[in-house]
Image (cartoon, rainbow, N blue to C red):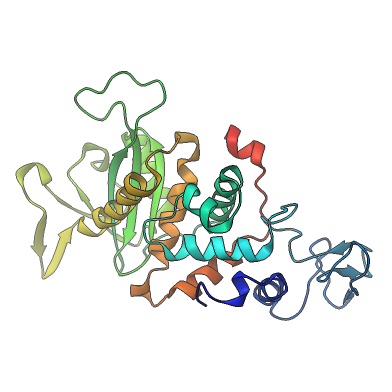
Amino acid sequence: MTVLSKTFTDEDKAREFLEANRWPDGPVCPFCGQQETVKALPAQGSMGKGWFSCRDCRQKFTVRVGTLYERSHVPLHKWLYATHLLCSSKKGISAHQLHRMLGVTYKTAWFMAHRIREGMAPKTPPALGGQGATVEADETYIGRKAGAANPGAGHGHKIAVMGLVERGGKGRMVHIGKATKKTVQTVLHTNVDRKSTLYTDEAKWYERDTGMKHATVTHSLGQYVRYAKGVSIHTNTVEGMFSIFKRGMIGTYQHCGEQHLHRYLAEFDFRYSNRAKLGVNDEARAEIALKGIEGKRLTYRRTVQA
């Protein structure tokens, strides 16, 4: 699928594409889950193409119902185009750019981008690593906390983000606000399989027993890679993920309120975990993102008040 695809310009093509993506075996009622009792309705009056009815619960619906697109007045082909752009741009795409390319208001483009990010976030993310797998962990700092005093030495005025990367696999970043032993250990226990081997730097919050095989590098002494039994111990992979994230946040988005950070993290996590090196191209990445729109709602009020 390219930017010239009819899916991005023709509403019927976009609807058919989304129906096939969401319901590969035929339409399913989003209200009661029935499939055999669903039938397509003919277009008539104010009810255009794409409507279905369920004989079991007597509800009518379209492919938008029960998704992040529900009650949106934005045409489906613009939603698909925006999803493609956000999935294929390594450093993201700003709401201003979406507003110009889609021909919608800035407010609409901003909200669309947040809905798409919401769809990229897994409902229940699986643990990273496992038997024989290596997970790197590190933390970084970004932006400035609301109401924080003028910057001084250290990271006290910045927002802490913890990163986890399974070597050769997926990555995940978590907003922790402030790096402490408690917050860091909680993230590790929640997101990393105990059978993994963990590599970190010498930071004090990793000193406590993690319940995993654990090796470190001492950055304060200029040690960035060391070798033990033929294995390279480093945190360069997770730092590479941080580098992509920071270039996108500084170069593309420029500013992000702390209340929205979790969705931006979900966006960068999604692209990293579905990158070309893992065999996922732009088209496949967008289709995976579309799988995530089901069963989620994000209202404008909830977004701005988050």
